[in-house]
Amino acid sequence: MSTTTASYMACRLTVVCLFGLALSSQPAHAIDLAGAYRRALSEDPAYQAAAADTEARREAIPQARAQFLPSISGSLMRSKNQTDQRSLSATTPIDREYEYFSSNYAISLKQPIYRRYNFALYQQAKSDVASAEANLDRNLQDLAVRTANAYFDALMARYQLELILSQKKTAQIQVTASVLAFEKGHGTRTDPDDAKARLKVLEAQEIQARQNISYRHQQLESIINEPVTSLAELDPSQMKPTLPIPTDLKEWTSKAEEVNPELVALRASVESANQELEKARAGHHPTVDLFVQRSQSQSENNVSINNRYLTSQIGLQVNIPIFSGGGVSSQTRQARANITKLEQQYEARRRDVAVQVRKEFQGVVEGAARIDAISDAEKAAAQALESNKRSMQAGTRNLLDVFNAEQQLASTRRDLADARIQYILSRLRLQALTGSSNEVEIEAVNAWLIDKTPTAGVHLSKH
Image (cartoon, rainbow, N blue to C red):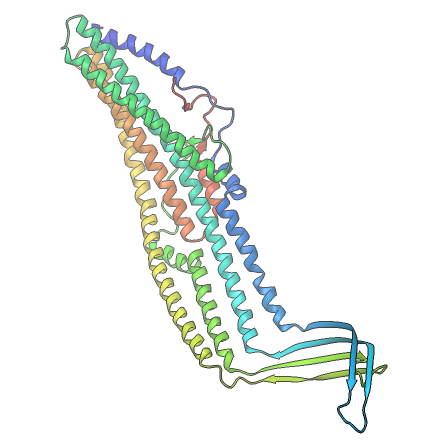
């Protein structure tokens, strides 16, 4: 074995031991994607606000229905009265003073018989509630995607740190080996200097990578309201990328146009605007109400002192609008303009959704192919590393060749992890765009994760 090779092996063993301390032990349990999503359902403030807003909007239906039901009211009045009566006639002068109590009791019922406005109001309430329910579903889909994005951003930040630590380990070995080689008369003075410069760059990158992990953890924590110290990692042996089913993009686009929560909400908003137009038109229509009233009065005035009157009324009240200054016509034009605006907003969003569906569909299809390609590249890089190690022992390769092969393998593994994550996110976004079940997809992805905390994990603090 050559001097360079022996130095390399000794330095490698020393640095591996040192970096074993840097990869400190983690808590006994790592949070996984399904656990993060369950926490987000109960803790994410944006989703909780949307749920409360939907609950409030549901009350529009009983409030509109109440307009069809009778209203009953009662009144009670009792007063003390004092009246002075003086006659202005010179022939029959009168000067009297009355002091008495009067009372009045009444109960009345009013039942709408025909109010076109109320019919439109009720239909509008149903449309508004349908829009609110669809928006809540959209927020639920958004929560699943946001949680997955935050989770895998944090996981990818850890993979990036692992790559930098691997590069740093190799750089430290290179520094030690180049110094030993120079002391023994091999190489040049610039070799140790170049190696030390590269090590310093990697140390700076390590600091930045640790800061990025902290930031990504905080992003996830803001959604689930729980400290994040360790995450379940991707298990390549469990992850089997597949093509979207159905495999026809047109079917995905058609499904999205039909059930995409945002499009459903916009269609309901258009219908609500149509009912707003009907409400405006109702201003030209008569209203018919049935009224019933029963009242009792006593000593109502000075000529009915100590007299009691019991009165009952039943009848129909018809109001016919004749002229309102053009207000109803203006409201009608305004409602039509709002309908046009919402229809155009729906069409614009429909096209955007179609573009997004195509993008995510291709992301799944191309992502599966990319994973296969990089997996082959990883195998080739691993084989190249072993070949370089054997060649160095035989004296046909040098230490730098082995370093480069190690870096190529580490970079390829990082790229493979990124490809897997991008495939997962495209799959989740595609399902969200087509209104598929969040929990089913989250659980499917969660099956690809494994808790490695007993044996692996990257600690945030620098040793």
